[in-house]
Length: 132
Image (tube, rainbow, N blue to C red):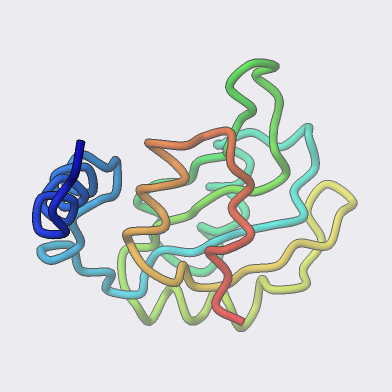
């Protein structure tokens, strides 16, 4: 049985179209989404929101949990109301202490990464979201 090169390419294209990747053509990251690491396992969404509200209005604060153990993975995401407030959080809250642990605060590289980690693959460590 022989296969033509053209038929292999089209089946490969069909395979790729079924992937779970997020279409980023219409998703824009305004820069107000923050990636927070170094969190204590005792921190709750509310604690994180309270810590960040000192620098502006918090739209959402979420700790990422291990899907099987339901324990904190040690990182989370915070969405601030404006880019200016997000930049203020990076300036003043990066390397701050929360529940006895030094946290890092960075901009999420893209909305695509945030969606991928938070919604599709909660068991994957989010280290690739970092901007450095």
